[in-house]
Image 1 (cartoon, rainbow, N blue to C red):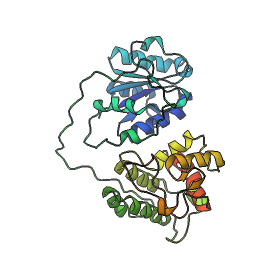
Image 2: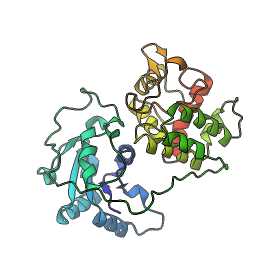
Image 3: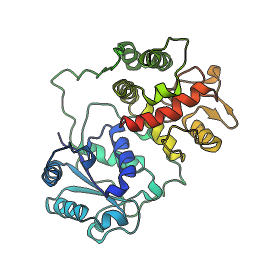
Image 4: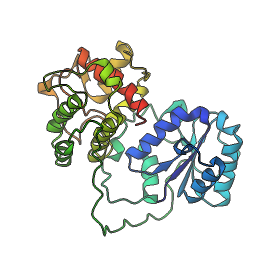
Length: 332
C-alpha cells in the first residue's frame, strides 16, 4: 500500500506525531521512523520505506537542517522524483526545495485543510471525506491566507477504485471482554447521542464499574489501551475524523495543556471546553441545550460522556485530564 513518508528531526517528534495523527484522521496513510520495529536494520528500513512512498513530506526546521539523515532522505526523494510537500516549521525555506510549494506551519500549527485536500488525490479511497475540513478549527488569524509558494498540485487525480471485496470489519478488540458491537452500530447509524451514552457505559464496564458509578483517576491512568483504541477508532472512523479522543487530545494540546494528567488551569481548560463546544462564554452547556449535530458542531465535541464531563465535577476532570495522558501512553 502506498503512503506518505515524513522526513524530520527527532527533536521535532512531538510536532510530527500530531501531524501524523492529523493525516490519519483524514484517512491518509502515513509512515515515519517512529514506527520502526525494534531489531529492524534501521538504514535499510528507511530506504525501503522511502522508495515505496507515494508522497514525501519534509518538515523543515533548523534541527532537521542539521540532520544528515534528513539531508540524505531529501536527496533520494528528489532523485527518485517523489512528490514533495515541504512544511515550513522553523527557520528559512531550504534552497533545495525552493522550486516546490511550501506550507507555512510556523508556531507549530497543523497545516490548513487545503493541505489535506491536496494530498487526497494521491490516495483515493471510497470513504466519504465531506467532513475532512472540519477535523481542526482553522481561524483566519491562525493561518496566513497565502502560505509562501503554496498551490494545489497539478497532478490529475486518480479515479477511485471499484470495491470488489466486502469492507473490512471494524476492530472491536477489548482487554476486558467488553462488547463494542452496540457502540459500533449506533455510530454507524449516526445516533450520536445514544453512542455518547453507550461510550460511557462501556468505559465504566472496562474498569469494572457499574452504570451508576464513576471512573477514578488511577483507573483512567491505567485504562486498557486496546479498549481505548477501539472506542477512539470507532468515533474517528464514523465521524469522518471529526470526533474522537485523539481529536480532543490534539485540541487540548493546541490550547496549551500538557499530557501529564494534571489540571491545566482554568484558562486552558475553559479554552478547551469552548473549542470543543462544551462551554459558551462563562458557563458550561447544559444537557438540555447540548446538540449532537455532526455537520454543525466543533471538532472534538464527542464523545463527551454524560455524568458531568462537560462541567467542573470530579468525573469530568478525571475523565479528561488523566485520559489525555493515557492516550499518549497508549500511542493514539
